[in-house]
Image 1 (tube, rainbow, N blue to C red):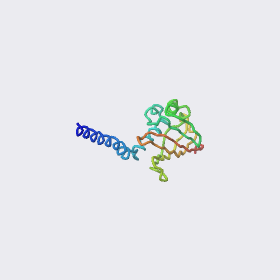
Image 2 (cartoon, rainbow, N blue to C red; image 1 turned 135 degrees about the vertical axis):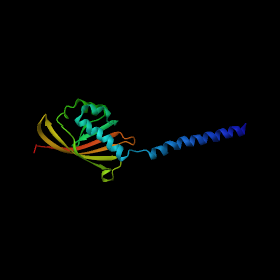
Image 3 (cartoon, rainbow, N blue to C red; image 1 turned 60 degrees about the horizontal axis):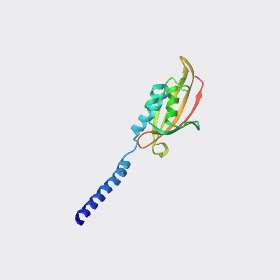
Length: 156
């Protein structure tokens, strides 16, 4: 009986150590790659010009967005609704000249997009903006922070 009990304890200890070590190994191997970071962030850029794309953006539930240093969104629900309602984005006609930088300044889990946004109503150009946007992502490639800096220039 004691030998059988000893084998059960040993088996339980081995199984427990496998369960405890498996998540750590999986977590170490996990992470958001450059390609996945760019794909997730591109979905956000798509939603700036296509309101229906708002629902496909992979966002952390508590994502926060800053525009020119001011918080403009504080949750995934809030951000997706802002993009879907499209009020302030309706004058963006396209996203152009996107340049991606992976882990700018050595910042892990960050991808930077620099792009131009022509601003207009119908065929009438109102201006343009160059945007510097930093996306911080979780290990499972959900956007958890967006920092955008931009100025709108008059049309050329």
